[in-house]
Length: 320
Image (tube, rainbow, N blue to C red; front, side, top):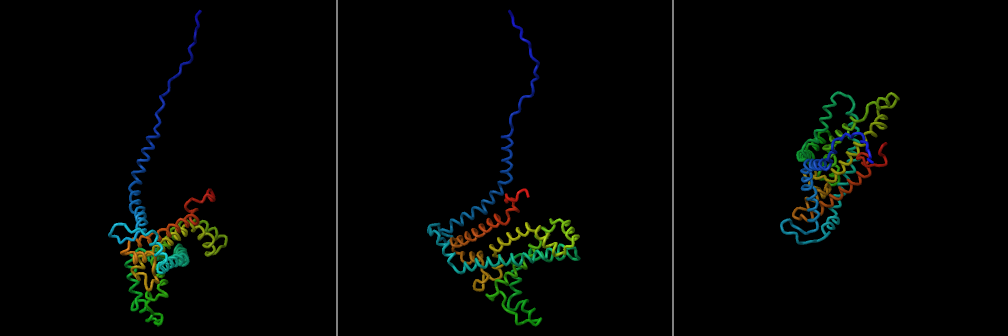
């Protein structure tokens, strides 16, 4: 007895499955990343990370920069710097300039930017004129102000010519006012950058909101205070961050005009580092590490608590 088996329907053979190409694409992606980011990473490590590490190593030695690193002294350089009244005064001067910049330069820049954001004749010229001091080299600006503020300089000459000769004095040689005179020079030099930054931020504020507030009867000042300035918040926070870091690292203008004098009245941490670190690289490195750590801590804390919404790290406000 035979068994008959019926043939089933014909099955058309499909194309052969392709070999997964993901590992090959990943390799290409990483090669592209290495090619594009590699040079920048090498420069960053060589000129930023490595000097910081070397400065930290040198700071633990009593080293003159010529001989080998042999005299390990631990934290003595740090203790010497942090117990020096001159260095502590320099830290205070840096803090004073940072706080004064936020309280005086910031509002001044916002007011001028709001004024220049309005349509008016000669607005472009005024914007360029305000920004001119910022593009001047610090050496040129510092030497110019040093000559103008000297006892026989232009400022005293003007005061005498207008009948205010009693106010004439050696502006940069008077320890009671030298720091504030220096702050005035810094304001003249850098407020143009703050104004430009605020003007750029104002371009992102929708005009429809101001027009709607105006239709509702709000005055110009009410519109700026309740709508424009709050929307300018991210720009203001970025400027405050830049101002704090710049104040902590202040060197060139002070060095050119006063070299930290008189009697340390305008001294800053960076100027102190150059004054007392020359010939003592170990001690100078300790001061540099202290300056670096102060700047790093302030930057991290500020970014963590003030700029987290701007940097997209505020999880509580995500999606709002």
